[in-house]
Amino acid sequence: MKKIVLASKNSDKVREMRLALKDLPVEILSLADFAEIPDAVEDGATFEDNALIKAKFFREQTGLACLADDSGLEVDALDGSPGVYSARFAGWHANDATNNQKLLAELKKIGAAESTAAYRCALAFVDTDGTEILTSGKISGKIKTVAKGSGGFGYDPYFYIDASRTMAEISPAEKNKISHRGEALRQMILKLKERFL
Image (cartoon, rainbow, N blue to C red; front, top):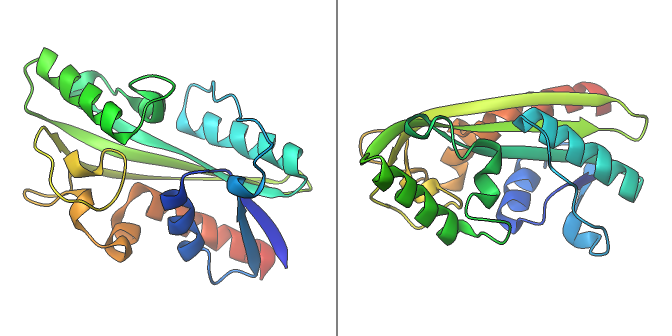
């Protein structure tokens, strides 16, 4: 069975991806299985750049095929910020709470109670033979300054997928159907099925 390392320590993200990849003949490992490996330096200009940087780095570090994602939030009123800096918007040691505080503070600075926005995701798979596969996904919605819901992670409580519901209020199954990561994963699964089945 093919071993694939998911380039993430985020247990929510790993769980989401394991569920999505369950029908492939692969064993999924995460970076939690390789605690001694340092972090990749994500200095790319786009989500695609960063996903590929991570996939190549962890393939070299582990000697195994690697699947990496880079995803984030682009808020139109903030000229596309936080973008590729979504995970560290409030600094290198940021977490969901501090990133959301910074997002609300930035919106308050410009007097915006809401803004059109999009979540974007790029997925990169790098196999042991150097083969590279890239896919991407996007979901549009609105960022509002009122949080709703206790599910999800990241900016989900502030990301409204319609007039009344946030990404944090929907089930994991519905989220996989409509989310940016779900879209990128569906494309990736089709390509990995061609490769492994």
